[in-house]
Image (tube, rainbow, N blue to C red; front, side):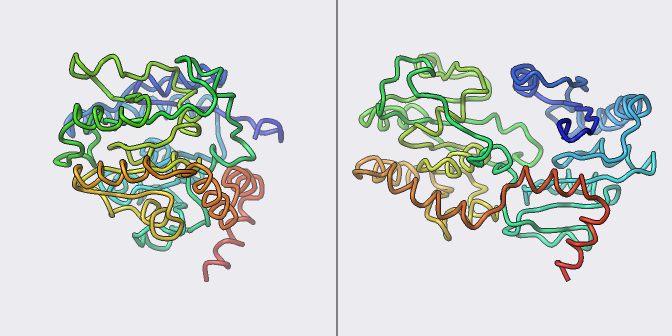
Length: 329
C-alpha cells in the first residue's frame, strides 16, 4: 500500500507475539495494549481501546479503517463517519461479531464461511491466511538456517497446545494426554512443541523457542502438524504439510472443513485418541510430503492472491465495492 503512495497507520493489541512480528518486519505501529482474557476484562477494555483508537485516528485522519474482526476500528470509523472494512474467518467468534457488525460497512469472509452475516457480507475465493502464505509472498528459508541442527529432509513434527483463554474457547477442550502424544510422535522423528503458556517440566525440553517469524518456515518443512490451534492447523495445510486439528470445536469452521473434504490437506478430530491414530497413520506412509505438495498446488489454483485482492479493493474503493456487490447479486 505504501509503495502505491498510500499512508498507512498500524495499530496493534494482544500478546507479545504481535509486537515481536511487527518489530521483526520493521512495521511502525501504535501499541494499544491488551483486551484481556476474561469477559469482564474485555468488557472493561473495549471502551478504553476505542478511546485510544479515536486519539490515534484524530491525529492520522484515515479515510478507511481495516481490520480482522476489529472492534475498535469499526467503532471509531462510525464515530468519524469513515468507511470500515472488516475481515472475518471464525464462525464461532460470535461475541466479537456482535460488538463490531452493526458499526462496520463491509464484512469480507471466505466463500467457505458457514454463516450468513447479512447484506454487509461479501465472500471471496480464498482464505485470510493465504494473504501471507501465498507463494507470491511467502518463500521459505532453507531448513538448515532455522536452527535446532536440522538436516535437509530430517523428519520432525510440530505439536501445538493453546491457552484456551480466548472468549470463543471458553468451555472447549483439546488434547488430553500431552506426554502420551510426545512419546508416540518421537518414534517418527523429532518433536517440537509450540505452546501458549507453561509446560509440564518433563516436556519443556521439547518447547519450540524460535522467533515467531520463523514458525511458518518450520511448518513448511515439518512432516506433520498436530494440535489445538485452528490457525496453525490451517497454516500448515496451506503450506502443504499434513495437518491435524484436535479440538471440541472440530467441524465448526468452513475453511477447515473445505481443506479436509475438498482438498484432503487436513483432518479434524474432537477425540484426541482418534487424532493421534491418524497422525501415526500419516507418519508411517512414504512420500507423504510430496503428495501434500501436489494437493496444495491444486488448492491454490482455486484461490485468489488475497493480499493482491485486498490492495485492489482499497485502491479502487468505492468502485470496487460496487463491482463486488453486483457480482454478489
